[in-house]
Amino acid sequence: MIELTEKGRTAAHAGVVAAEAVERRMLSNLTDHKTEVLRDLLQRCADALEVS
Image 1 (cartoon, one colour):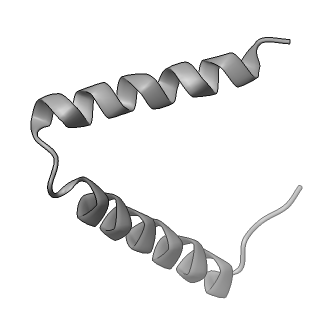
Image 2 (image 1 turned 180 degrees about the horizontal axis):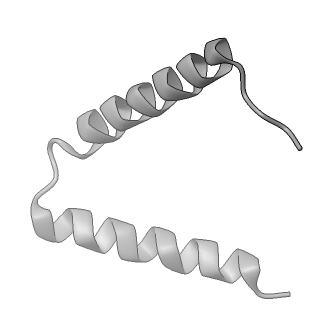
């Protein structure tokens, strides 16, 4: 069993906060519709990688 230390949990949380900030900035100039289209296209790309 593996468990994060308090320092590890703090670092992981900081990473999540940073990633969320980047995502908000990246999507800030897109309309809701364009954001939806982008998410759909990215999901299709991810799905294509899952197929063996």
